[in-house]
Image (cartoon, rainbow, N blue to C red; front, side, top):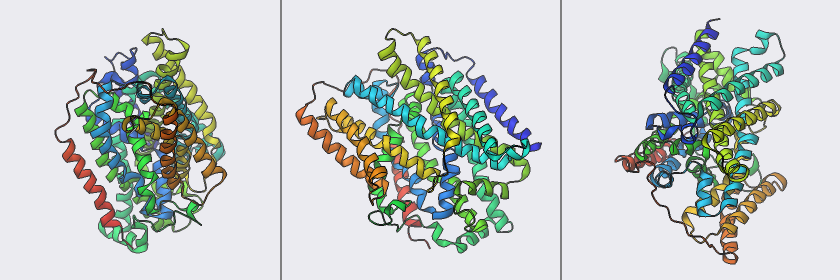
Length: 534
């Protein structure tokens, strides 16, 4: 009973606090609902970015991968800091000068309306077909394992998963539908601090137990048990036989991973929407760079526990990696803390789920409904359409989440492979919009179509002996070539300049460059210090 009480008390506190903070906000206006009234500060942005990014597909998926493959998967996290530096110093100033509400808006200004619409549809499809169902499914596994819902209600485990998916999805939809971006951001911030506390408690308690009250001794014992697990540089093959089964070959850090990280942290709507809602550029830069620091530290929560789990379980869960993290939590967490932990876990699920719903609603309402279905729609109607969109997408995600089969390479690897269908083509077009002035609207559309088909054909149909992240890099280069070639035949006809329309103060944070240099050096230090361990 105590665990359920702590669960409901924390959840109620988050809901009550967020509702109180929003009591004076106008959520019926376009900026108020979709961008939090452009009033978000650095701390709120950082907390929201962390929780939008870190969810159960990280806690469950990445710890499962670390359990089996070691710290090589840390690359997904620490290299994010470099992309966040680019976001803070280059992209955020330009987005805020243009006063954007969505990333597809930029594509209309730079190319044309059809390019914006295509990207908008692809973004919505990527949210519904990959991110939302996997987040719900991985979250349901954790909650079912820790709370043992099926045993408590005397139902099958499959029925327990269904029930958990429906409840979590419904609660997330309520937050996103009725509170808008600002409600999502505030709940993210509280849950973010909760996640850091609860997440770090798992390895701390585990190491305390292993070392008989001495955490450093416990860490030494875990290290001595399998020192190779701490090595962050993988010697896996990335080209030829075995490349498709590799998890994170070191070489991919210099090809497709760069493009993926740039897209996610500088162009992905659910991430950048927090930046677009900033009260000023200074606060946006603070939020992005604080997030960069957290991303370097977050492997303590989503990598180290997986390595510790190998000390406890050896190869017991090699074929069921999604059960590793919930099993570790049950083993080391005091019974009275499980309610709080599951509440924080649910907060992490809700954050990513809510953010994707809010972003999809923003894109559909402003980029599709107002443009094609009702050009005269007022702000209140657009907000209502956004709420309806969130509700429909939530129902769809809830319906398909339980059908996600156990991915042989793990949930996180599955998510990344599916994301590659959409992320790299869209990244190519957006980057070309900023850095290649000769690319035309026709070139952008043909390049986008080529990228989608190329990745699906090479990775899923031909299944060439090349790691999928390398395919991203190859796809990026070929996309650029196709766009340049097409643009020679169909040259650019419009003129575009980034101008400051005065929506918010765009004065740079005076410590932005110094903080950015620190993050770059810290990222390099991780690979220098842990690159030859074991």
